[in-house]
Amino acid sequence: MRDLRRQALESKKTVSRKAQSREASRATSRTTSAQNSQPTSRNASRHPSDDEDADSESTTWSTPSLDEFFPTANEEEAASENWQTDLEEVIKDYNDRKRSSTLSREECLTAYVRILTSHYVEDGIPSFNELLSSFAKSIKTGSSEKEIILALKAVGLTALTMLDETIYENMVPMLKRTISNSSSPAVKVAAIHCLGACTFFGGAGDDEILEQMTFLLEIVSSDGHFVDAGDDADVVTAALEEWGFLATEVEDLEQESEDAIEAFAEQLESSESSVQIAAGENIALLYEKSYTPQEEGETIEEEDENEYLDDEGLSSVSDDEDNDGPRLIKRYNAYHNTPRIMNQVDALAHISGRHINKKSKRSLHSNFASIYNTISNPRHGPQYSNAIDNETYRQYGSRKTLKIQQDGFMRLDRWWKWLRLAALRRLLRWGFVTHYFEGDRGVLDCLPVMVRPMGGGGAAARAKASGKKGGRRKVAEL
Image (cartoon, rainbow, N blue to C red; front, side, top):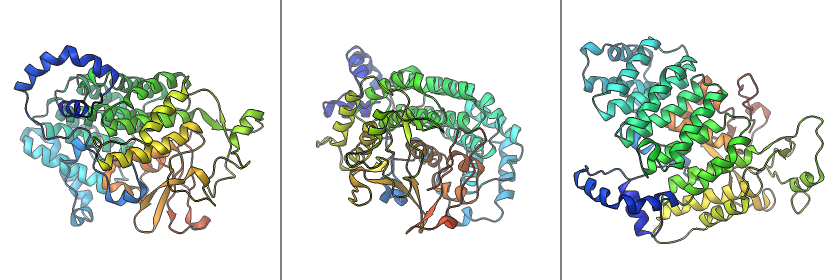
């Protein structure tokens, strides 16, 4: 991560304490290897934001190393009435590897990704098993970086579309080898995101989810060295993002919380805002998960009752329309030294300096002010802490929202919703809204949050999405 190291030295900041301790011992070898390395134009952790989300102060959704490979579909292609036929032909051509070339496979994969991004394939993907085998061949023996990355993207979209329980067992071992062995940082990033999608949508159980979270945490804790991507901001950010996404699916993280927050707290010292924000959001999620709804017949201790009320004796969960929701009760300590975490987060919420560009500074201020509120009281979800309405929201700010088309929005009042939305946007990009309104089962099961019309709306405007059986995913009416 040459750019990241240079920025860190110029700003007199380190990537992390571990990276600083390694720097002296690697100085000589780094100088030698730099002479033989290819120059790169990829800006570490460059995450372009979506224009449509500018009003929501959202964190970044796109994966920088992937976007260059996926030209946005034009309206004519996206609206094609023959897309089902096109999909069948693309799959047939791609599976016919004897008569294919690297260029033709890249073109087929690009078309496949575009179709699955633009449309919900409700009736299933043709030649599914043969297609997975072809994806695996492209990932293992692809002739170009572009082919491999496109194949990884295609596998993630296929997992979301099919929800097939064989995808995890068939693809994940190969994905982990790719993450560890690939010489391309961009391929590692794509494979990490594909690993998250295949684990979440591809049939993994609780133990398997925790296993992959442990793998991702090793990447984070080692600053990427665990997979031979030392101090690469994109790789570390991807691991943080997918760890948080998978963590939303685990009901009880009491045993994992301490070590995870310790690792994430170290990443708060990174010189890259994408790493810092992803780490901070995961910390907020873990504090949120240390509280669960009050169960039927459960009594509340006096100290919990006092904590639940603010200084005015009002509910500290200050959503204007959800005050009648279940009370959240603290079940365990998310971390042994919360004041330390709050000091780090507060510093980032007020960070200043010329070494930070205005966009990164604004993003850090907004996100870490919200993260700080959650850590100080985990009953508070993601918020705009600067949007103070004394009559409605008091000091806590308004809930973060996502604008949907021209006349609708989602209210994201919990961190698990926020992180799942981010994961879906990484997978579907500009096609998220289409999949949502077409009733994509994977999307609605993952994010059971309703679109509310601008300016309010009654009960008729708030149809509920159905969560999966088993009770692990809560249905949210916003």
